Length: 145
Image (tube, rainbow, N blue to C red):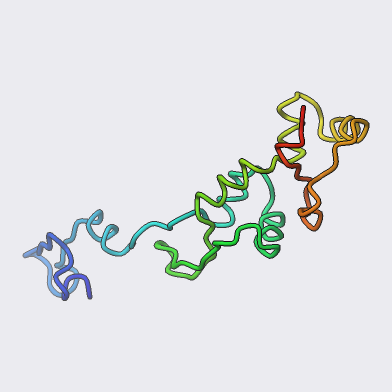
């Protein structure tokens, strides 16, 4: 009703054979556009986990550890709840600097455990600054696989 009263919908119709609120006709796409505000200016934690091919636990560890320094709280346009959002450039910067054991093993066509043993034989150690994370991440500059 506030959308109609504040004249925020481009088209509002009326059925003549109905009375009261049942007589109001609106275009649902117009309502959807008016209700859902601007999209998020980044990725939710869930979307970031999918992009990095990891779990939400790892993303939470990275956020708490300060690796996504520009993490901000935004209003979700669909649920209108506050949620943490990681800017797109922060995720791209992280992906350009680090690579996970999972991604390395898949790129080399091996199982993660087998690749981990080979990695240890070559003396490649996970990034020291990411030791607190529940996954093994390596600096791309130090990996030669």
